[in-house]
Amino acid sequence: MAVSLLAHEVSDLCLGKPALRSLALTTTIAEALFALKNSDDNFLSVWNCDHAAKTNNDYKGNCEEEDCDVCECKCVGKVSMVDVVCYLCKDENLLFPSDALKAPVSVLLPEIPGMVVHVEPTSSLLEAIDLILQGAKNLVVPIKTRYSTRRKQHQKLSITSPTIHNGREFCWLTQEDIIRFFLGSIGLFAPLPALSIDTLGIISTEFLTIDYHSPAISELEAISRSLADETSVAVIDSDGILIGELSPFTLACCDDSVAAAITTLSSGDLMAYIDCGGPPEDLVKVVMARLKERGLEAMLQEFTNSSCYSTTSSCQSQSSSSDEESASSTPVSTLHRSGKYSRSMSYSARMVRRAEAIVCHPKSSLVAVMIQAIAHRVNYVWVIEDDCSLVGIVRFYDMLKVFRESLEDTA
Image (cartoon, rainbow, N blue to C red; front, side, top):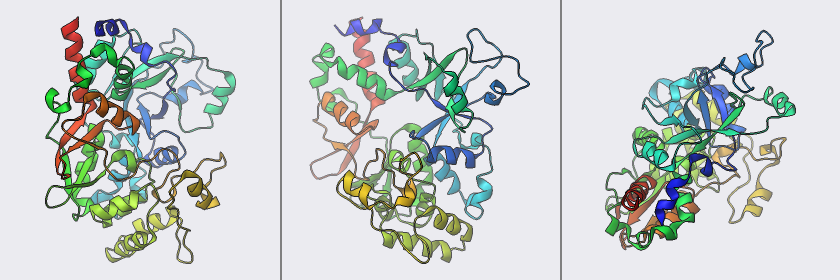
């Protein structure tokens, strides 16, 4: 019976999860940008505590030891490349992007309370679900790890580091983690998983859209909101047909030069620009020309510096139908010493997704939509009719409400 799942604690879902990489609340946006470009994570946690105190020679305590109450650390949010890009696209930052990067990372955090919540590892699964349904996007859970001296020495050399307090590191617990956990025991919920999303009434008609031909910058607020809501912005034509999407997940795999593309391109062109093959050369030239026309010389300089294009040469095409071809056609200059690819020219060799939307139909079963979303690492699936007209969206949030009600009924 599904009621047996109620015996599980939050810690059961955290087994094997990596420790959070952290930024201090006082970190500058420029430092956060550098950390994001050199991190395997699309998001970095932001903490309201002084990590430097732990390694300061004048500090006699050690917050990495058990039963230490000197440094009270609290995660207050998370930042991604999308936060930085949206910030750079604001009117007040377009003329002087370098100055904008000097601001503290705290200005990037949304003013929405309760999006990040600390929970104990002994908290019940039901408590975790309730917190998410109340608006929490990420639950911060302490995890026990063996923390070596060698690792501590390495940490001092990095802008980001695992957050240590009372001998514990922390990890995220997300909506995806819980949905994935339920999928592993989906048979316990029968016949619920076989029912259509239409029958369950979980197709939401409240979603963000933008016209294919509209300037991308006109929907900057929608992109920011979709990031906070962990959804996306649907790109549609005048007949309401779904063309694609502007996904924060895809944008998070870009570098900060995509701010110039958002500022100058239409939504349709922006989809092509951020597609996983890398931006077409003709669109790069369009961006540069429009930046010059609008007198955004500082942004043009930043765009030129962060791209692999210059006034004398251009990169080889990085578009490829396979990872092996993409790797072989990528310029050597985009490799870090670690052997990993950078986010050069809004492309990351890490897991990225094309700008085409993930879709289902109203009669799709709940379990089928769950599998779709998890397979593509998104928290939602667009719902369309046979003619590709957009009907709505199904989110993990809506699924969790259904599972929560099912658990309550069987308890």
